[in-house]
Image 1: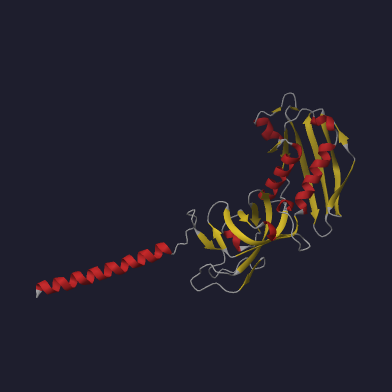
Image 2 (image 1 turned 60 degrees about the vertical axis):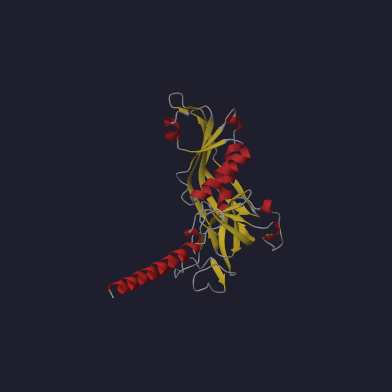
Length: 293
């Protein structure tokens, strides 16, 4: 009898172990790894409803949270347009919980302009605002990756364009100060109305426009880096641009501020009375009481 009991106990243990092995196998095969070993998740799984103002859904997720043929949309800003379209999800989107940067692949004929007609993918520029449609699947890399079924241009971050227009305007003032420079330093202490990604886009666009190295630095920081000779009061390799007292009226689309371009103690130009107004798709800038040193 004892021998029979031992056999029964062994058979029960083997059965339990086999059940555990099946459970482990199910857990591994349901993790959703793609061919590149990046885990695919759905940004809209779970009960958290945050971000629904900018994220719309057609249909319902399956009970097990798997990705299906539903279409989700979210708002984003274009950071860079290269082999993929790199975007920053809107602040109230569920996609932002996955990553602050998402690389989007999309068919060339699935990009629409403001009028709803197809546009060339190269027409999307950094700072453009877009609506992206996709199936909810996000590859957990950095940047995160999605395959979109549609990208629609919805507008433009005109505040980015405002800073670029102001910088370009003062850059062209007293062009002799720009002689033999290789860098442009920007004091961004007063740029509280921009995100870090907005600043990154501005720096990238300025670099492409002027072919200069773009630095984010104050006068004191440039001195510490040895770029400004404090004794001679001279920035040999570049110019320092300072925008202060920035006031943006979003409703009227107007700006008031002060701005200065500094090269040396005896080489500077600026104005404490700068205004800008957004008209017909561009910023019109006017300055009064321009001073030169």
